Length: 146
Image (cartoon, rainbow, N blue to C red; front, side):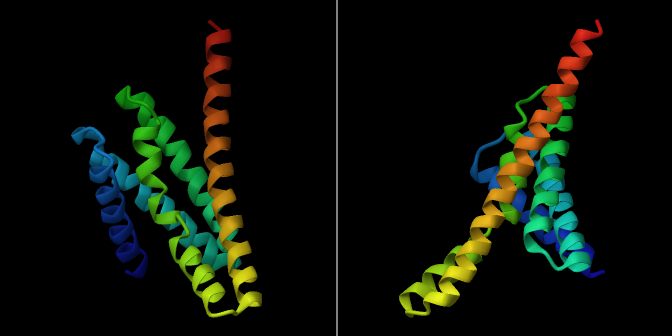
Protein backbone atom coordinates (compact mmCIF):
# COMPACT_ATOMS: atom_id res chain seq x y z
CA UNK A 1 0.00 0.00 0.00
CA UNK A 2 2.86 2.37 0.84
CA UNK A 3 4.48 1.73 -2.53
CA UNK A 4 1.21 2.45 -4.32
CA UNK A 5 0.86 5.74 -2.45
CA UNK A 6 4.39 6.73 -3.45
CA UNK A 7 3.64 5.82 -7.07
CA UNK A 8 0.56 8.06 -7.02
CA UNK A 9 2.45 11.00 -5.49
CA UNK A 10 5.32 10.76 -7.96
CA UNK A 11 2.84 10.25 -10.81
CA UNK A 12 1.12 13.54 -9.98
CA UNK A 13 4.42 15.35 -9.36
CA UNK A 14 5.52 14.28 -12.82
CA UNK A 15 2.22 15.35 -14.34
CA UNK A 16 2.62 18.75 -12.69
CA UNK A 17 6.09 19.12 -14.20
CA UNK A 18 4.80 17.95 -17.59
CA UNK A 19 2.10 20.61 -17.55
CA UNK A 20 4.63 23.22 -16.42
CA UNK A 21 6.92 22.27 -19.33
CA UNK A 22 3.98 22.36 -21.79
CA UNK A 23 4.45 18.89 -23.20
CA UNK A 24 1.74 17.70 -25.64
CA UNK A 25 -1.53 16.88 -23.90
CA UNK A 26 -1.63 13.32 -25.24
CA UNK A 27 1.72 12.57 -23.56
CA UNK A 28 1.04 13.88 -20.05
CA UNK A 29 -0.36 10.64 -18.58
CA UNK A 30 2.45 8.57 -20.14
CA UNK A 31 5.07 10.93 -18.72
CA UNK A 32 3.40 10.66 -15.30
CA UNK A 33 3.55 6.87 -15.45
CA UNK A 34 7.25 7.00 -16.36
CA UNK A 35 7.97 9.25 -13.38
CA UNK A 36 5.99 6.92 -11.12
CA UNK A 37 7.85 3.82 -12.29
CA UNK A 38 11.21 5.57 -11.95
CA UNK A 39 10.34 6.47 -8.36
CA UNK A 40 9.23 2.90 -7.57
CA UNK A 41 12.58 1.56 -8.83
CA UNK A 42 14.39 4.20 -6.76
CA UNK A 43 12.43 3.26 -3.64
CA UNK A 44 12.98 -0.47 -4.17
CA UNK A 45 16.76 -0.10 -4.58
CA UNK A 46 16.95 2.33 -1.65
CA UNK A 47 15.10 -0.11 0.63
CA UNK A 48 17.06 -3.17 -0.51
CA UNK A 49 20.57 -1.71 -0.61
CA UNK A 50 20.35 1.50 1.46
CA UNK A 51 21.95 3.51 -1.34
CA UNK A 52 20.25 6.66 -2.58
CA UNK A 53 22.84 7.03 -5.34
CA UNK A 54 22.29 3.50 -6.72
CA UNK A 55 18.53 3.91 -6.40
CA UNK A 56 18.66 7.19 -8.28
CA UNK A 57 20.85 5.69 -11.01
CA UNK A 58 18.49 2.77 -11.62
CA UNK A 59 15.45 5.03 -11.35
CA UNK A 60 16.93 7.40 -13.96
CA UNK A 61 17.90 4.44 -16.15
CA UNK A 62 14.30 3.21 -15.97
CA UNK A 63 12.97 6.67 -16.82
CA UNK A 64 15.37 6.90 -19.75
CA UNK A 65 14.57 3.48 -21.18
CA UNK A 66 10.81 3.93 -20.82
CA UNK A 67 11.08 7.44 -22.25
CA UNK A 68 12.95 6.16 -25.29
CA UNK A 69 10.42 3.35 -25.82
CA UNK A 70 7.40 5.64 -25.55
CA UNK A 71 9.08 8.23 -27.76
CA UNK A 72 9.31 5.64 -30.53
CA UNK A 73 5.76 4.45 -29.92
CA UNK A 74 4.21 7.93 -29.95
CA UNK A 75 6.70 9.35 -32.50
CA UNK A 76 7.76 12.20 -30.25
CA UNK A 77 11.15 13.32 -28.90
CA UNK A 78 12.33 11.31 -25.89
CA UNK A 79 12.81 14.50 -23.89
CA UNK A 80 9.02 14.91 -23.79
CA UNK A 81 8.90 11.89 -21.48
CA UNK A 82 12.33 11.95 -19.82
CA UNK A 83 12.51 15.53 -18.53
CA UNK A 84 9.26 15.41 -16.52
CA UNK A 85 10.00 11.79 -15.57
CA UNK A 86 13.19 12.63 -13.68
CA UNK A 87 11.58 15.38 -11.60
CA UNK A 88 10.78 13.09 -8.64
CA UNK A 89 14.42 11.93 -8.58
CA UNK A 90 15.99 15.42 -8.50
CA UNK A 91 17.72 15.97 -5.14
CA UNK A 92 16.12 19.31 -4.24
CA UNK A 93 16.04 18.60 -0.52
CA UNK A 94 19.73 17.66 -0.60
CA UNK A 95 20.58 21.01 -2.19
CA UNK A 96 18.48 22.83 0.39
CA UNK A 97 20.06 21.03 3.37
CA UNK A 98 23.55 21.59 1.95
CA UNK A 99 22.95 25.33 1.80
CA UNK A 100 21.29 25.34 5.23
CA UNK A 101 24.30 23.59 6.76
CA UNK A 102 26.61 26.14 5.12
CA UNK A 103 24.60 29.06 6.47
CA UNK A 104 24.58 27.52 9.94
CA UNK A 105 28.37 27.01 9.70
CA UNK A 106 28.11 23.20 9.95
CA UNK A 107 30.77 22.67 7.33
CA UNK A 108 31.27 18.95 7.92
CA UNK A 109 27.54 18.29 7.43
CA UNK A 110 27.54 20.60 4.44
CA UNK A 111 30.29 18.62 2.72
CA UNK A 112 28.65 15.26 3.47
CA UNK A 113 25.20 16.27 2.28
CA UNK A 114 26.62 18.20 -0.68
CA UNK A 115 28.74 15.28 -1.84
CA UNK A 116 25.79 12.89 -1.71
CA UNK A 117 23.63 15.42 -3.57
CA UNK A 118 26.30 15.78 -6.23
CA UNK A 119 26.59 12.00 -6.61
CA UNK A 120 22.80 11.74 -6.96
CA UNK A 121 22.79 14.42 -9.67
CA UNK A 122 25.60 12.60 -11.51
CA UNK A 123 23.72 9.30 -11.16
CA UNK A 124 20.70 10.89 -12.87
CA UNK A 125 22.87 12.14 -15.72
CA UNK A 126 24.65 8.82 -16.18
CA UNK A 127 21.36 6.87 -16.11
CA UNK A 128 19.84 9.08 -18.82
CA UNK A 129 22.99 9.03 -20.97
CA UNK A 130 23.25 5.23 -20.73
CA UNK A 131 19.62 4.72 -21.74
CA UNK A 132 20.02 7.12 -24.66
CA UNK A 133 23.23 5.39 -25.78
CA UNK A 134 21.56 1.99 -25.53
CA UNK A 135 18.64 3.23 -27.62
CA UNK A 136 20.95 4.64 -30.30
CA UNK A 137 22.99 1.42 -30.39
CA UNK A 138 19.88 -0.68 -30.88
CA UNK A 139 18.66 1.68 -33.61
CA UNK A 140 22.09 1.48 -35.34
CA UNK A 141 22.08 -2.34 -35.25
CA UNK A 142 18.53 -2.47 -36.65
CA UNK A 143 19.42 -0.07 -39.48
CA UNK A 144 22.59 -2.03 -40.26
CA UNK A 145 20.71 -5.32 -40.60
CA UNK A 146 18.35 -3.87 -43.25
